[in-house]
Length: 177
Image: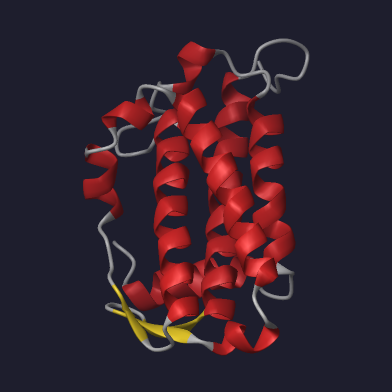
């Protein structure tokens, strides 16, 4: 059964509950890099199961999500109460062929954008973190809430990457078998 928007939002926000979202956001690229260090390139594109994303697809999704995140936080920081357009991640994934076929490039794009987005958020006056946008599906989201959701989104995908990478690793770090 597919999650509702409310269920998804609750689950994703729950992953980062009680944690500093900026710390999570800043550390994610290095954590992804470590997890993928021993995964052979050809293993990045293999899907683990029907309907599940490959590592390359997750990397493409993270890169595209970072583009969206950067745009959204800049729009809300520049104009309180701005509308936030939703997007269908599955449609974006279908159209992300260039990024899926270049997982290293997708990871580099994600890393560079994330670094800039974290720097941008850190540069904002504390009062600006209360600015909000009106998300089409989720309603009112402050910059604080957006950062927490993206941190939870990171933790969700880090768990997926960890599981997939462990199954595809080469050398002594490989578990099982």
